[in-house]
Image (tube, rainbow over all chains, first blue to last red; front, side):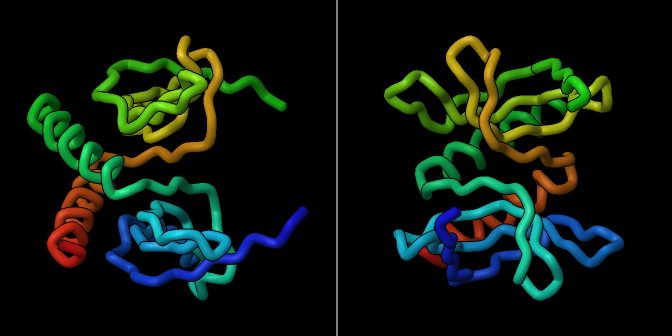
Amino acid sequence: MPEITYDIQKNYGVLSEEKSGWKKELTLVSWNGRNAKFDIRDWSPDHEKMGKGITLTREEAEKLVGFLQAAFAQEG
Amino acid sequence: MPEITYDIQKNYGVLSEEKSGWKKELTLVSWNGRNAKFDIRDWSPDHEKMGKGITLTREEAEKLVGFLQAAFAQEG
């Protein structure tokens, strides 16, 4: 498997934390040297291991915020 | 591999769409009969095949909205 490189350029905050110390975080990550994207993912305490996650462009992230706010209003 | 069951209870919107018709969507999904959670994931046009994604609790989703809004303000 080709090596995946990543550069965590910003860490915006922790969404939740497991007892193991792994945290679900919103970060800005450049994958394989490409333009940095928003990234929601589980990370080990030292950020050396990663779990499943997704990347979002700015446009996708802006839509997501709108949809979530509508969902919160709907769910109460 | 044990079978994974899922029930898409709500579809809040499409974040982006590939030429193939696959869409990245925000949905409310019950996985394996458990409580429904927010879910950000790629889906085939008929929602029969799924790509990588993540689930978020309401609490995680609320934090995410706050972090993204701060990020947008920061990035300009």
